[in-house]
Image (tube, rainbow, N blue to C red):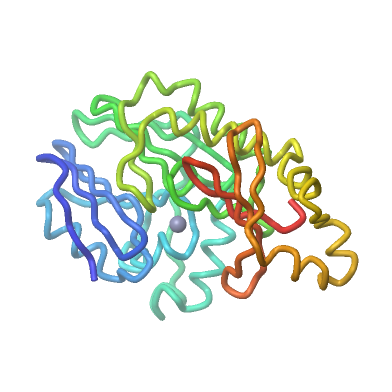
Length: 280
Ligand SMILES: [Zn+2]
């Protein structure tokens, strides 16, 4: 069930359960940002809101952002996410027609400017959450559309395609230009976030990359590396409770959670959470 919220005369957010899309209209065309998790009708929905031709861009290729891509003959995406997209497309999840006739990906690159007609949008490549994640800066409106990478919920940072080091680097780049936006529109959790969330998440990513999570757990008597070596038995028992400790990004509480059948570590900070590999 989708919920359409008109933010202003030429901007909408479309809530699709736990994830959201955006529609930005210029004077010549409109840009749909993502197609949701359960929204094969995203294209017709967008076209019902504007008379302008609708172009699609994906912030990244995770399955909860592309459910309606099959209705587009082509769309914009960073090429580093194409392999993940093609996998899902080939599975038939985006419809039989998309499976039989793979859609054309128009590659975007860091620094590209998409002009919707009096509304320039700057593409910022922010690898980390996925290799091809992008943020979109609505230059004149001073809004940053951040995808999953900057949000107040739990950012997925576990599994083979994620990189905490790249994530930290991308957050540093966003943090360096935070005087260019007044508000962040993320794909999940709170619909709006303040620009200083980039710096807070950067501190969290640095704390993770610097081994502070493992150290904090170790000090509380949980040695994850050892636990994984011991076939996970001690680990499984130890991480059922929440463990709290201080980090350079502020207080952190850690617990093991199961995400789609995989045990991962949820490191919850005061401003957001990070879902990490257990041996992060
Ligand atoms: Zn997502």
